[in-house]
Image 1 (cartoon, rainbow, N blue to C red):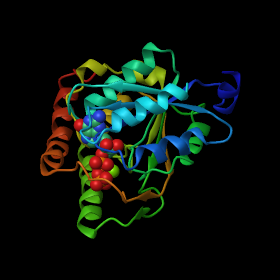
Image 2: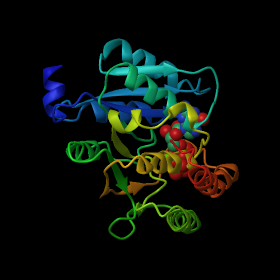
Image 3: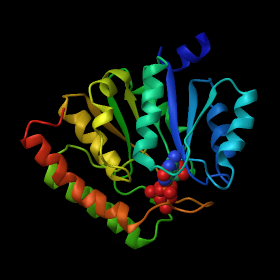
Length: 249
Ligand SMILES: Nc1nc2c(ncn2[C@@H]2O[C@H](COP(=O)(O)OP(=O)(O)OP(=O)(O)O)[C@@H](O)[C@H]2O)c(=O)[nH]1
Ligand SMILES: [Mg+2]
């Protein structure tokens, strides 16, 4: 444990990774995170009973690896609630730095250390695709334009000082997570990231972004849908209205 603590700047760090049908990717992601030198981070996979056996793969691996943990849920319940359950696990088990990343290798595991480096100075450190230009590899143009528009729209309406409001790659300290009511979250897809950033920002937490390169998944299927996009479009208004009513905290 002492090695883990020193490598993570004195933090106990857990990266929460939600999975649904990521059997083609998950072993590589786990190996690359566990292979980070020095060993700084533990892993929690939140799997929704993936039909492709992702959960079983992780369970086998966890038997041999004490830094790997698995939370199994009975069926597909959505990205947002997977993160909420993962965060609750992290807080209950005494981790004081909690990271988020996808299982599809869009986020570079090496960047976890760059996020952690800022965790002493900031409550929320976001890996941003749009901080210094546009750092997205292999996304089709319509997808990129949609993401840029969603971020612009969110920033204009919410006034959040964040360039990548929908980023799923970040590091949050436990104080900031405890300052928001996880049981009050209502969004699930990308919108969950917007809601998380907004709620943390409104508690007065210190936030920074660092540039990352985001690479389109090479294996497995996207879970992105029109429903998810529509949720993101409406969520910003819901958050604003709750805030006007004084009910955001
Ligand atoms: N536990 C759980 N994980 C999910 C669910 N939906 C998506 N995920 C995971 O959330 C992460 C992001 O999902 P993706 O399908 O990659 O969505 P995306 O990154 O927006 O879409 P792409 O860019 O096309 O990959 C991946 O690790 C998914 O396996 C869900 O309902 N439950
Ligand atoms: Mg993805």
